[in-house]
Image 1: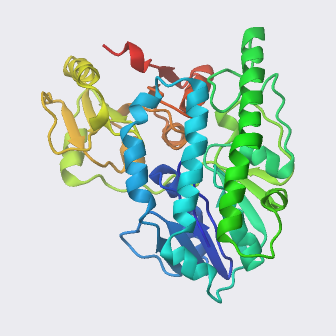
Image 2: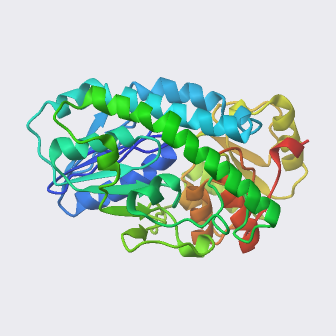
Length: 401
């Protein structure tokens, strides 16, 4: 019944009548939508609450469009480059505040309010647990079990739901880039940051989500904390081959790669001709859906262009503008690329990425090594695992010159 993804949204599905909630981040939305589309194709009626509209309608799938979150998230995206240099404590605080604001905007949407006041019935609620706990109120409102999802693997927010242990001696915090085999100093840092994260969550953040929940959902109702501890299943968008071994309780299941298109298509004609004519191979460069290349400072952009200009390979660059001053002939720009189809092409020999989990998963599936330029969130951890796993290298954004 709802699908919320991105930096703070949730997914809800309704099984006979299912529902989904979607987040402002398109990458998170892709994971949720893949699951919802699969359910719809099997005959379930699915309702998605999302800030995106599908170009090609899917049978049995209805979308409640959350337009209010779009401008808010667009403003957030403009500052994602600066997040790279923000302190870790400030980053955590900003993410939690972002989650509360997105949750409120979504629940106050006119279409969502109509749904809450309707006679609709649902069989299941699927929520992405990423700073959007007030969405769990849908489970009480429609009397459904709760399935939680995570677009980037296990973390504090999902582990708490079902009692999954997370030993700090070898499970690094999501906001850190430490390996599972940490040094003593890294373990101390992991302990300190995780305790700060826990204190901030329990004493400064969760009560804000509870306030939103109390305001939106009518009484009588259980406390948000009761709903938070009443989740039946957690689905993780990760796979044991991508990370170090972690402890999971039986109702925490890895389903990594839901968004991967196993049946690739031909590239658009102009792009296809460019890729096929690359005698020395093609490098694909994309900073994902949350970091736009056009927001890079001029000195960083010029450094990247000079590097590309010196290569004998051709380059596909996700550039969100029709013009790129100083673009060399071996660079092809586009505001959008069919990423799975690009990575599946035999001429593509490397992927320069921000290190998001979806991008790294797709790279591994298609057998393309990666060069990561992590910017914020779990990207540092993903790239640390790529280096440890031998399928990637890290290029420090601050050292690009």
